[in-house]
Length: 321
Image 1 (cartoon, rainbow, N blue to C red):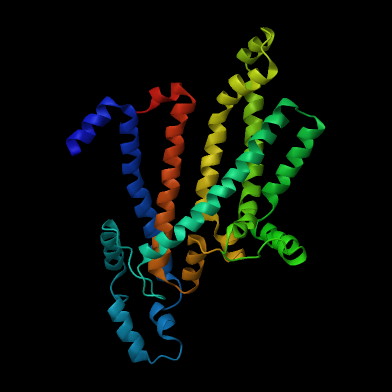
Image 2: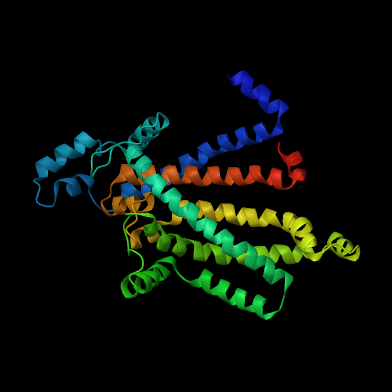
């Protein structure tokens, strides 16, 4: 099996690049898990006391600490976590007693749905507005869109979420204020996430398009009488997409791991909200499992973006090593 992988990587540079990135993912996950494990271990609070309650006798707390392995040295507990995680065992939640991996697997589709809709909203708004702003530089449309984009970048997600709930749920009664019941429940959270990302994508699209449309080959195409929409859509846009795709990929990864506040505001049953609840309860296995899982998801999204570069610009394929 290993021989075939090596042979495949030698013949196809793309596969060698992917394997290299996957191997580099391991130290990233180890570093993230070590940092979070240290933070959760040295912050005040006793998980055993939280599980049994404040009125529990000291003997029961001490017995539970021994049973949970909390009296072992730090390095022993961390090594135990890593050894179990390699086999897919992320431990059991201190608060619920359920397997952490199962809890993540049941909630991650909700987070993935929310992040996907959010980034789609951002693309649908950000890319066209950015193109229009670049092709009409210094016009009223350009100035207005940049002001709106600045406001979108500046607005915190939790404040925007509360304002949307106030308008569309409390005052108008059109949409639910939280929870997950049907398709209408995802509209406000997706808008909350997509608005900030749309502003960032708009600014990047405009900046990239302005740089491309000033190139000599664009002037040559226009001098030959090529229609303006062909110049923009076929020649300029394709070459301007690389930085835009980078931002979209980063935003998607951010929405996967950074939707914590939005999920909390809307009581959305996703991984982010589960992590917040686990931090409050000092549920170390759940916090570690969710952080490592989201870090892996973010890294895989970045890898997918790097691979996509080769399809957008074939010249990049020759750089894969």
